[in-house]
Length: 270
Image (spheres, rainbow, N blue to C red):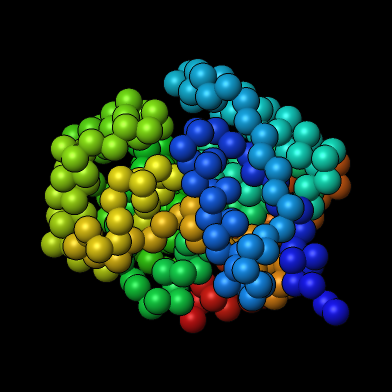
């Protein structure tokens, strides 16, 4: 008898923050039941983590090649223990994605998020995360390719959100005062025309749930985990090209919508 779990590749998690990586693992296990249709059934999962301070030191020095080097080492370790595909629930690290080398395929966190925005036919979304995520290309390039407008918090709010993430959330501190502030920011985004908000920080869903928000929340970690599970069962082909050892795991920074697989092309342009 065919076993859907056996068709899902061994999933490797490149971890950064403990809270985010643990959440990703938990979601993989929980969501697998609905994907494969069997209780307690989930694919093989392996997680690798370097000390968080190594990532934070490199990020603070704007050393994205250093970030990519750590991610590349994690990918190699995961491949050696049998991982057939890799995900990284940390949004900020994806700024270094195009510099990462991997012996197995890697699913970019923005792919399933943007696809969900398009599937819901939203045309304007807010984004929350670190300053790197809110101000950089991790999501913005793919959203703009899909003709989605983006609403970001103002400069002062972005700075405060960065502080909340770095000083509280990654340490497992979820303060009511911080939740109220994030709710205020989301309400302001709604007044500026956003139809939903991307939680582009792995820990934000631990601070704020969907029913506590003025708009629908797009949990990037949950969408990433579900896409990884569906890949094996439904052969959706979400992975960035399966690259042999020594080749880059990601497309070049100049990638356009026309260069992604056909089903993603259709999703981004419907």
